[in-house]
Image 1 (cartoon, rainbow, N blue to C red):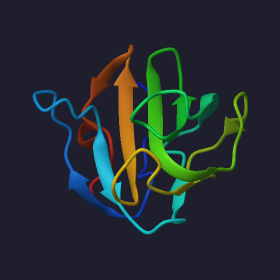
Image 2 (spheres, rainbow, N blue to C red):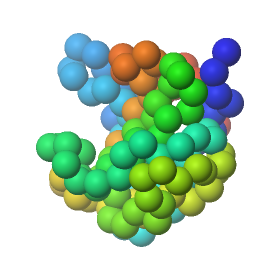
Image 3 (tube, rainbow, N blue to C red):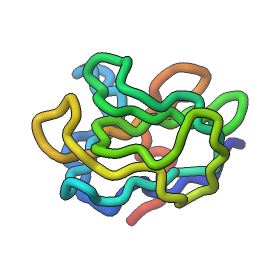
Image 4 (tube, one colour):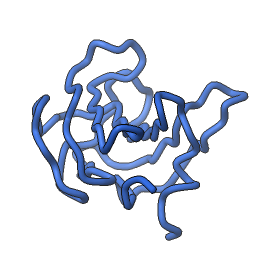
Length: 123
C-alpha cells in the first residue's frame, strides 16, 4: 500500500517525470527560502551535498519500499536519523546545483524512480 503522499511544496510543476529524458522526478519552481515539507512521514536517511547534480539533498525513507528525495535546497532543517511527520518543514528551497530556485522531488519504489504524479494528490 505505501505511504499517504502530500505535495512537498506549493510551487508550480515546471518539469514532469520522464524516464526517456532522464528526469527521475518533478521540478517545482519557487522562491528561494520557500518551505519544503516531507511528502510523507519517515526517517531522514541522507542529508548533504555529496551526490553530484542534486545540490543540498535530503532523502527520506518511508517504509521498506518507498523513498523520497528533495534536491537543490538552500538550507536543511533536519539531520540524518531524524524521524519526521508528513508535512513537517524539512528544508528551504534554493538553487544549489540548479539554475533556478526549485525543488527537484523524486519518489523511488524499491530503488527505482517512479512518476510522483501517480502518487501525489490532485491539486
